Length: 98
Image 1: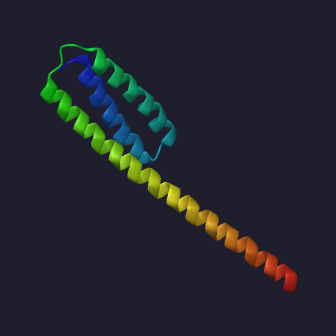
Image 2: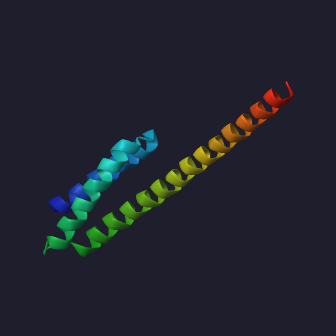
Image 3: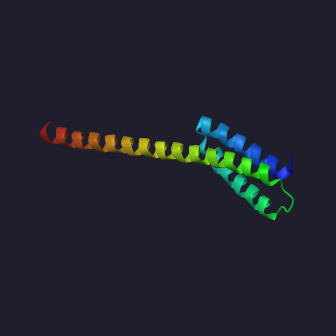
């Protein structure tokens, strides 16, 4: 396996681990590493296309999971902010009539 393919696999595995821990800082750093890997893929002439396809499909699967997790986290924040806003409004009404 070429060095580029190994880097893609290692980065993918690290992304899976960071996602499991919800370590968004590490995910951001690993995303940059993934971009670097993609640049290396484009510049490398001799790659096993079948192995590359498998690696990239697996990486795509991880990014789908990351997207779902990020959307879930975003919705949780929206819900929490909505609850805070409702609580603030209730407190204003309580103070108004209390």
